[in-house]
Image 1 (cartoon, rainbow, N blue to C red):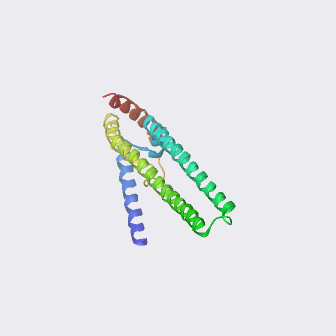
Image 2 (cartoon, one colour; image 1 turned 135 degrees about the vertical axis):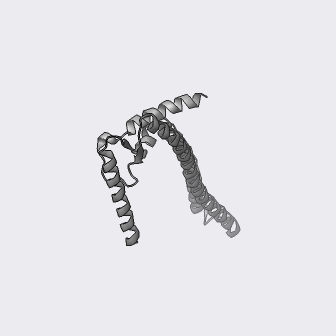
Image 3 (tube, rainbow, N blue to C red; image 1 turned 45 degrees about the vertical axis):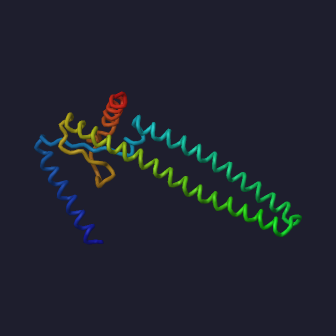
Length: 179
């Protein structure tokens, strides 16, 4: 493990030194982006966030309804338990347990659905961002655009092109969504 860490540190160091030497020649232009900010602040990110929240609210409503049904069944079982025949009590307990199991399965399925939905939005946005970043880099004559959280320990804020990329991405999506 330490061996891989050392190799990674050496590789990053060599990359930084080579970037510094190329940067000194004034012909090398690089920038970095904060992908999380792009995802959160871009128009598509806002749309995705809105859809995720709407789905979450819908699921929350269904969960609350199911939970209320389970509570009513439990109260009814506790209230009537002693007055019921053993067979009827067993039937009601069985129905209650089935509702609880179904509720747990629904919660689990809902969590999976939300993760899948988030994954779909993320996958589409990353695919689109790859196209936009490529065009943005060529138009801006960048030789390199890095993602802030993937290994950059320090970079001058003057090289942060996140806001400009968000604008480019919003323009690109506005144009391409009309088509």
